[in-house]
Length: 237
Image (cartoon, rainbow, N blue to C red; front, side, top):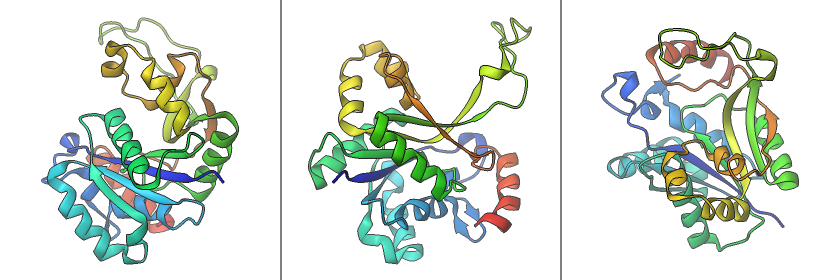
């Protein structure tokens, strides 16, 4: 039977938020954002374990949060030191999964941003279904705004066709064996400069299927995002 793991990337320092602590630890409806996000995955029977990659300085703090807010799922949640970027964190999580649970090429990993607490059960289920069938999945919604392409940051170079544009979200979900194989085939330059995990597949010409996201599945990155999230939390959390 295919095992399913969640990998939550929580290694950011939150510099754009301007807070004293990383943004994933900021309160949202009386609980840290990370706790809301983690519970979305840990509470699902179809997910075997949840791994959280955090900065090494915040591991103990994160462990205390899990014990305080999610004691019912404590045995299902594992906290590891994250990497310098998202992909390094993802592969550290994969290493931790294989160290604890063994290596099975067909195992599935859902990779998710710690600061997207409004992900739904439906989005997660769709990711798992598509990953089992196709191997690589990215969550997305159609872009509703016109997008400018600017080469110099001051003038409009071109206006891409909006009908073909989608806004990427997470989860991004993969068969672990496939993701490892494609990553091993990247050049050293690509390994350093590809920051989006789906790009590991697309740059090696492996198709990434799209799961339907939600415009409410926002990433909380700025103080303005947090204000929006506080409003959404009253209805969704």
